[in-house]
Amino acid sequence: MRKNFNNTLDHIIKSPIISGQGVYLFTKDKKKYLDSTGGMTGSISLGWGNKHVQKEIINRLIERLTFINLIPRRVIDIGSGVGLSTKSLFEIYPKAEFFMMDHSSESLNSNILYDKNILPVCADFKNIPFENSTFDFVFSSSALHWEIDIQNSFKEIYRILKPGGLFLFSTYGPDTLIELRSAWAQIDDQKHVNDFYDMHDIGDLMQSLNFMDSVLDVEKIVIQYDEVSQLQKDLKNIGSRVFYDDTEKIPLCSSQKMSAMYQEYEKFRSKLGHLPATYEVIYGSAWKRMDNIIEYAK
Image (cartoon, rainbow, N blue to C red; front, side, top):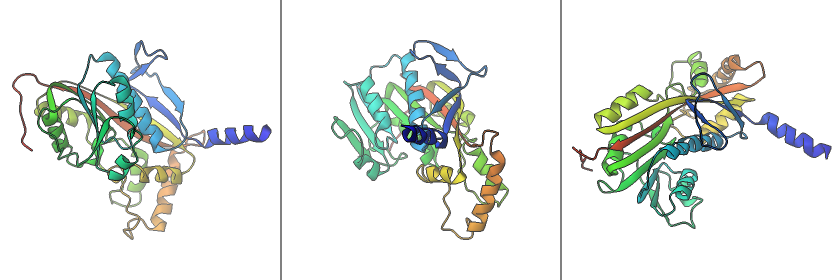
């Protein structure tokens, strides 16, 4: 019994802790909206791994549907991966026709919804293979950063939305992995972390594309690690549009440089002994105009 307890305790200690300094929090019954801009902070132990961060972002994004009156007939989840977000959406809108789209055929082939009437589509975000005005609801969580040309991706999303359709999304902001960016900046002038769009730039982009009633806000989710190597393992699972994995491009990431970066990152270690990794998460929603509609050719 003692051995089992120690194993459990050891697992908890080694697990990163997610702490959200959010724009909003929900009570346990999810009935009351709380504004947390005054400093309310949530802290959740989820076990270590970037998948847990993505799942938490999905949950926080989907919570927003509580305040939106929407009964879609056709839904697409862009950047669905294996279908974590698609599954949650399907439970909310079981009568809707669903499509899950990702650029990774491997993820789609491993999707967790193989027994559902949901159609997988392998396609590029900036060239979505659907006709104009196809979907009532376009959803995308932690995926738009995969495209360097986010403007064209938003343009495509506007094109496939039906008039009056909803676009609900999350993506990463410029303070994402700010600790890693800072540590590398002390070592060389190479790019090791990708650049991300600022919330205000995204807002301007959406306005220029004729979206209406755009709502954007941002929060920071911080994961605590024991070692930088744990963070790196997670980042390799996120994708090259977040983390520039240039290990094979010698001498950019030589063992000497990597060791020096580790030492710089150690300067962020907290009094509790954890190393933070910050994700700046931008949440957004907007609607396609019912009038004066701009249709974009493929």
